Image 1 (cartoon, rainbow, N blue to C red):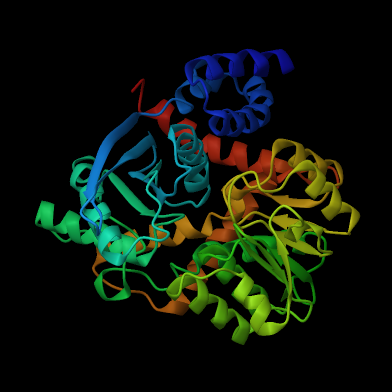
Image 2 (cartoon, rainbow, N blue to C red):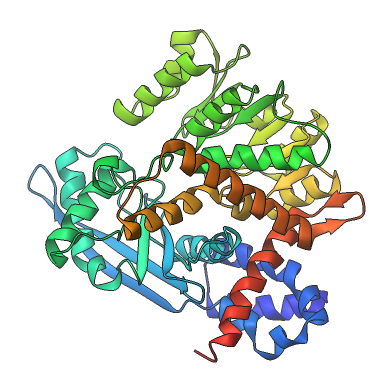
Length: 447
């Protein structure tokens, strides 16, 4: 089996050189699925792994725009349309200086499995640009978004590809992108999700990824007869996902004690309560300040990046919610040593393979991103449904559906990942997501 995995990965690396994040994402899935293919040869015969790891389409384009000083700037735009077997491509747009083809292919590949797990009819895609909105004026962000959409609009649509937000793409950016799409196509359709509530957005959408990660942790803890209530939780990041992770932890009776950004992290022993969270939201979403300001205001401990990280703080449950590969082997060992019983990933692939191995060996309840953070895209799917129906559901209705979808994802993970006295959520999520997409691909022929 190991030789088959090595042989397959050798081909992947040769076909996709210098795309290490993509290689990492594929390897994790292949290691889970290869034994499953041995028992179900129809998938191997249909060359399903070879097909599912190859994007259906990759779009790459130039994005020229003019900054406030009149200088012409040039960025690169991407859209990876990975798989549309069970529905239109669906996945976020990321605007960040680190964006490249390999990162977006990894995200699009993960999205295929994540969207499959939600039970909703959505394929997988991802896109973005190496443009960084940080430090840019609203006018500069608008100019960039309009130029970006002037090319992207011809490749997307409500029944073709429905992008959403991701790192660097919030409500402001979605608004500018949607406005340009509407202008170019002369139509009002649900082509983007994460829209403003007054023009097609869904309640609970901003909260959904964070809420979902906590709901998933709650389901994992239930298998051990436990809950979030009374648990000390560490959270990384301080953006949308981290903020609403903290909010839901508070609502379920837990205590979140950390938040971070690229400069460092804060540790508040008393807990980040609702009032303190309001300050964080104002700081990050409006003032676009640094998390260090929280430490000054609330007399919390602050550690600069590189010296310590939230995973050094003793906790019961950890929520990595910042970015990929932020939890390393030594971090995982520290978490296990300090008694962490559950890890629920709010970010995409935030744990390195070595860290995952530590969690699984220690029998920590470990929810991989494709299962634990699927709440965001689930509510994006619900936004698409509301747009198609031309109506809006109440906050309670959307939250109930989100909770139901999270429970369904957890049930799928149990179905395919249950082992003696333990659940391998990585295996469960990978096989569960794979089967639905692979069956659809077989039924649709060699396309």
